[in-house]
Image (cartoon, rainbow, N blue to C red; front, side, top):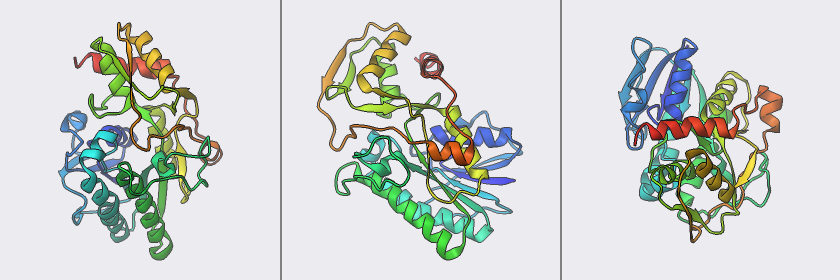
Length: 308
């Protein structure tokens, strides 16, 4: 099996490439390194691994057979998509179009990395796949939310009109080694502040909730979805919900930090709740997360501690 992974040098993409290689697959990694890094894939070696520096909003050419196209290219953190709004919209629209075009031309199956952000600031908790969401299309977060919603629509259009074999995974908050220290997401932000004994920044009163899935659990769910026949969107994430304030206190406990908490105003359209309904993933894929929060956080903390 030969698999193309767009965004393969990013946090999730690199873990996915690693898993595919471990399963004996050949992997072609495409990345323009706008948020990815070659350090994430430096340990992956030919002959079964090939890295191509490429912006997937442009025409994609890959020589030879392709069995799967996994589209993971996109800025994915609030800092990234607020600093790169046009690039975020382009990779969700043009990039998805080009990646689907490659799958169609090669007769390959296609998997889109979508996001829980398609649910916006949800009015339903937990969020099932049949919930249409509560998204502000013109807010600052809209560039990411709507790029992914468009990407889902494009994927389903190629499935229905061109008969492309497609999958859509809606990824909820995921953490683990290879996250960027300053990408603005709550896990690396809190860990880095704690390791430096700096005040930990909690937005609002900290009562907004999140759920955190360790990266190996997420990749297992994605791999099972890739091999399944499920074409409609599927949530992959950890349904264990906690407040941001509770999470900050857990990070302080596990790092042994002297950090205090400081509160700042909530960002625009910041979701108040975020928790996946994984009933479908359990039923269709036989999947649910296995790694406890303390175990996953400890591994992630050690990763960042080693890079101080």
